Length: 78
Image 1 (cartoon, rainbow, N blue to C red):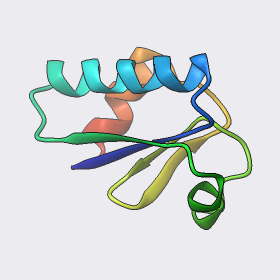
Image 2 (tube, rainbow, N blue to C red; image 1 turned 180 degrees about the horizontal axis):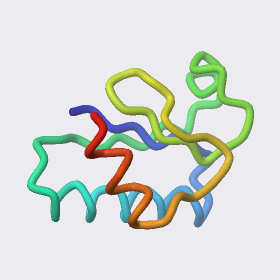
Image 3 (cartoon, helix red, strand yellow; image 1 turned 60 degrees about the vertical axis):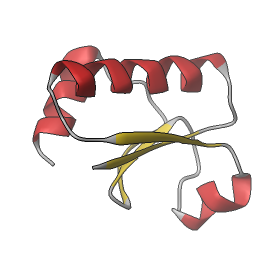
């Protein structure tokens, strides 16, 4: 599973990346996490507000920071 965190590199984006990585590890998933800060790449996904989570090329959330429970649910649906 390829997980991308889209954002400017702000504290919210950094914290979200760490939280997603922690949850995925706890769930024993096979994954990689990549932080995407390039605005052109972010806009290519059609994301207008960050942070956003992209899993295997599909935007899952944008413009908010989901709770740990919400992240678990998002990852278990993939």
